[in-house]
Image 1: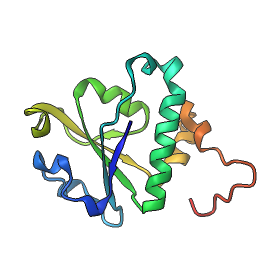
Image 2 (image 1 turned 30 degrees about the vertical axis):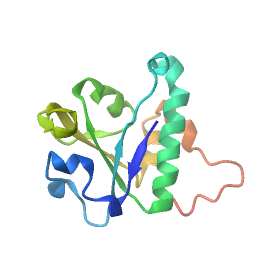
Image 3 (image 1 turned 45 degrees about the vertical axis):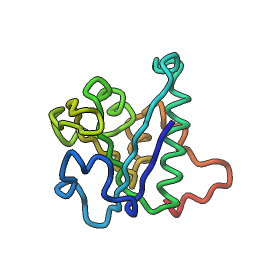
Length: 142
């Protein structure tokens, strides 16, 4: 499950806990994803890759249609490696007292969607298959 808020949804939920301004990039409309979760039985890499692939591809396609270039998430430190595995980058240490969760420390992470398919392919990432062009697909708009 994923919830996505686009630039018109600002201030984002995370902005009750931190100033997002220093992390916004000119020409990169932001979005916030929350409720990013995968049921426990599907969290192992061997079984979860298709679930991750579907969620990330869906997120990517929706963001493309909404002209969102950067996705931000406030993550619990225990989820950092999972988000990094799907190419989110950590922007802060895990010291943000995240108010929606009673001030439990979180970290801010960003997923740059502009060249995501290229980065998956260049990293020989297991999720790159989800971004391979389909037969007859026009990729010139990407």
